[in-house]
Image (cartoon, rainbow, N blue to C red; front, side, top):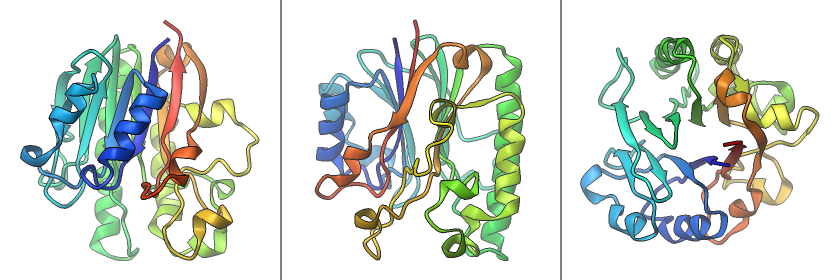
Length: 259
């Protein structure tokens, strides 16, 4: 029963101890990482190989960066970066085949502030992701698109609509772009198992006591193709990881699939 995890680590070298602890405790089969903030040559690959998690990496010095690690099995790299990526210098997408599943690790542009070229880039990037997702959907194989989408899909996915009303993560255009992907036939794993959960959060800001107040929102998603969704047996948030000392501001999200 393979498990797939998405975890925005917010600096892999700063959180190396937290991440190796997480792997030892939860032992996911596949883990997709985002926001590595490290170039390929400075990534702590040896530490993960020693922990039994070889991987494929798409790093970037100081910013962005994505990876896919798998327990006891090296993922087979399919691609780094999206086809026709509007800014290929940013490391935001990696795709691999592992344990009979095609998996992508995604770090979508933040897009703030709205009304600037950063928001335009976010929407352009989402359109390229939609096109790649359509190709993967057409393959009719098990696929999981895992990552930090930097999109709050619905009102109930934020602690405060008013606090987020001018944020790129909560704009109608961002939500519509996300829906265009989902409506290809993808299953939102978290929502499929927690359809009525009002505080299904995956991110809590370091500022203003957000974690202590549980003032979070849901931006980390696992989208499953039909043949992957048919095998889903559970999904959730490992919220405990956010409460650790020097934790990432994201919690890992997970899903399990039947063999």
